[in-house]
Length: 297
Image (cartoon, rainbow, N blue to C red; front, side, top):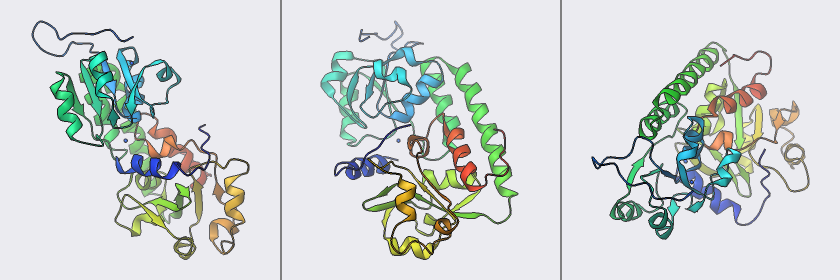
């Protein structure tokens, strides 16, 4: 579980991460046909893609990652080439991978500069749980691990279908407030990755009334929405976040607080990072939304 402590630098870093919605350093030249080798050396510029690369068995081909690529543990052994969506051109030129993959660069001019180095770049969009299987299959073809990628993609697709069927047959749905941060208050809106996770888990995201991916809100707005469940995606330095929420002035009238349905201590990467652990994230949400009966993905 990732321990995220409140600090003045967290919010801009988190917002940059949300708006962007997400390795041995020997030179591996193109083959004699001028094409990318069957097992190319790869640099990943997004933590979600790094997770997928390891999940399909291509982790040993990763020669570069970002500071945000922190899972699985083996990723820590891969050299860092920059921040999420912001690689160092000097590092890329030094490593000179066969392939760079990203979800969205902070500056699209960077894409042209990467191409100027003679490095093949692929951008892989993954904004919803439904995009994960397709992203895995694309990475499988790019890395030479199609069999493993196709198998994992099928498992995830079947798991999503199971959750969807369960959610559609559940009748009335509990309203859910997913608190991404509390200073200021932020949550996911309609079309966000977190909203889709909540829907798969059988709940209704209170943020769906706003047509934005992620946005700032007031305490008054949250109280007015009166969610049945509150899930906090961060951890406090010295106390329980759930306990702090339960004791917030004016929040005692909220259904989630009255019924003690406030939860914390999540690994927020499961909910903010589209990747191979998507079913795990949905399962955790489903456990707090409808703890009685859970589908087996």
